[in-house]
Length: 511
Image 1 (cartoon, rainbow, N blue to C red):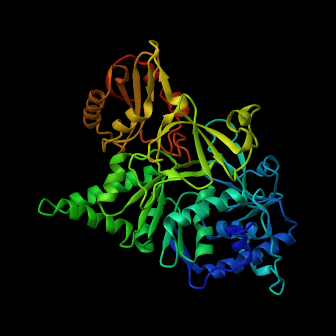
Image 2 (cartoon, rainbow, N blue to C red):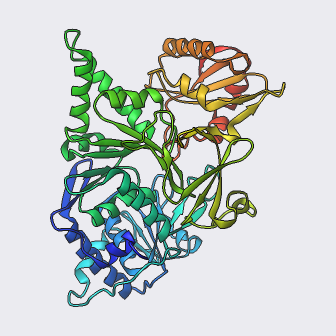
Image 3 (cartoon, rainbow, N blue to C red):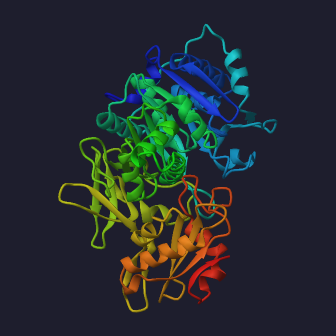
């Protein structure tokens, strides 16, 4: 593939001097990218010795770690296919081998079952590799598969997406054109490496010679100040949490301090003093949060994409419109149907259908020529910026035929610092009920009630919220009310709070 970033990574060691650092609670480790690349080559040789060949699948079930990155890079260099399992969603189960067609499964702290090795064995395999052997250089064509992505899967078995080298290359080229990452940059990654896009920034470091820091989610805030990144990649929920932390720190500066200076100082203490920009996507970002960080001297750029499409659009320096998700990337085309539902056509599609999906599911999403029906509602303005209005499935049709798009109402309700997340339901097709995740373990019900009043005043008669159900504790990945990318799981939230949603009393009620 001419100009392929993946082929360059496979064939060439990274520039000397660039480093990768790994943070977890209680420890950190660092190595040069050139050393990482060399060790991955020795690991690839060892995997070949275990019978792993080109196209074979290697599963990785572990949190973010150096072993995760070594296994992924080793597989890339030998043509094996990685299957990343988020440990928050998948138990260690040797049945995964048969279910997902794995040659081997590496699992953190586990091993012993046939085909299952502990991730700690990575070091034994590297040490046992014959140092005088050379790993044959392979090449990827655009349609070759490098990894299988597993979707969040709100119910049933997660669907699989075999991901093409061409889709990864096109995304990396587009991002590099927009942001020009290079020596002096340090990209901070803390979301699960099982999410393929998080590995993009490691590939970027190997190709363009910048540093990269990989942290576990739990260690992200402590690691930020030590790592001093120039770029932080995070979902909106992470930045909402960071905003609350910065605001709390700024209030401690006292009434005599300049409020703007206090915020900027608190932001610098949290994120370090080298931030060039912040990257967000995967879920809608609140306009207030975007403005907050930009005003604090940390420009933040929102984008749009799905597992099925990779990155579709992105705001960036010189082309940024708050409220939009940016202009389309090269090789991507957005098509809107008569109802405003978005379909995406790609020069290099991720794939052409799901694995492990019920009959008919792939056909509803994937069309001919790489077209993906996203299910999102949107519009494109006169300057080519894409705006996402919500999910087509989340448009509520009232019994009088009026249609209510829920996302703007949810975002308005979430503008309160007391509300971390919000999902709207319509139990009888006549009125709206909001289930909110409080921003603190002890909900501030008066603040929530005040925000309910403001939101109802901002919208029309058909969009009034009759009742707010305050959840028992906050939505989280652990209680299965958020996906691994911290998006609310509407169906699970409905199941948990169904009785309260159907209660016909008004106002704000904790359950």
